[in-house]
Length: 90
Image 1: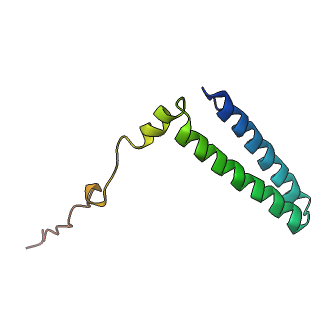
Image 2: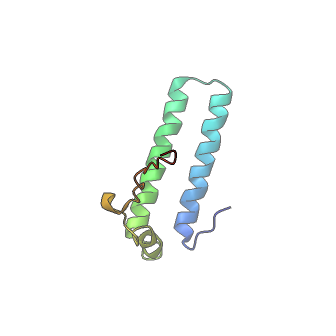
Image 3: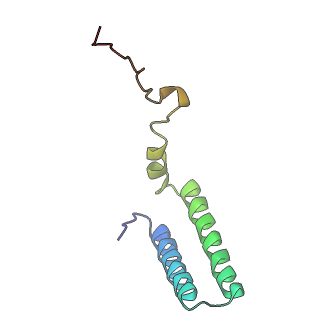
């Protein structure tokens, strides 16, 4: 179970888990598309609320900055060494 320092984020995560459980039950029961669409719309709304909360909450901002601490650029990717063939027979 994830642990959150922010109580509002904890509540949003619990709501999101509840919606995922509901969606999975609807999929297993082969429910109608409208019910499934409604639940997925709620999931999108909750994901956006979590993103908005993490941008604005003073308690959650330090954790969001950890992901940005080491940016990688395309030039920094390790390159494979060239293949050098040796002709041992000669």
